[in-house]
Image: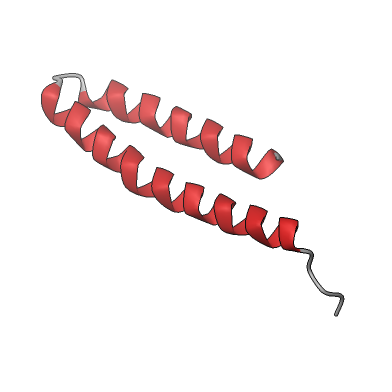
Amino acid sequence: MKPVDNHTRTNTKLRRQTMAFLLIILPSLGLYFAMASSCTFAVWILLALILTGMVLAVWKH
């Protein structure tokens, strides 16, 4: 098992924090918009697309 360099470890930690942040914030925003708007279905589809895009963007890095 080769040692992990500091930069990689920091990067992984940061990525994990970002994912946790997104997973907490986005559903909250989605819930808020769903309650504030009548077209709940459209809002949730949009949110799902945004979430998928962000997850892909984070993992591709």
